[in-house]
Image (cartoon, rainbow, N blue to C red; front, top):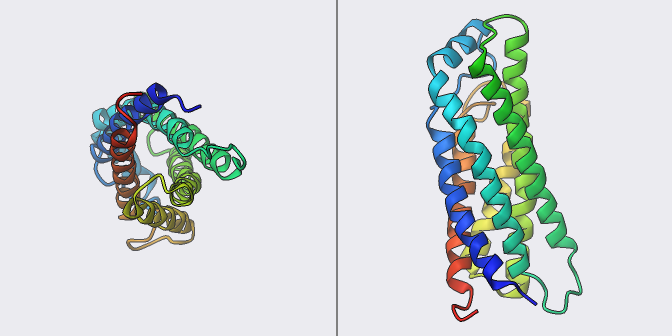
Length: 220
């Protein structure tokens, strides 16, 4: 039996989480390329210390809300006969891994804002490690988006346009992981994809949360 109260709270959580995640991602501005010198990266962290710290702090509740949304969303999309949960479990695992990698990345950046180690050899490595975790995280988010879109289509529980948007998010997030192979240009690590990918993913989350909220019977 579906727990409609849990699903409704998950929808509200998705709305709050998506908004917080967008704010957390946008307030520090565009980070410098990882190919910049250690002194340039250290200067960026120093000049954006307050916004980076706030971004790291906001990321933690944001991903917690989004994870709760993912759990409730897959509960709503559950096969009434409970005959096949493999795809939903795979998608939930993607959401959990994305959450974990975001927490680690936010913790690293938060630590850097507390004590900026300067332009020493360890700091650029810390910065690159933080960015790589962020990129891999959206590889996991791609699995979550694909599973949600596919389950929504199979069960007929979500509108077609939302499923198409979910597949688009899957493609964008999966393609974002390819930035590991680029060092310059818009497709490079910390290029425009660093902003576009989480924004598109968050917009899908926001819309999916609103659709879920309006789809749950009010009398439940």
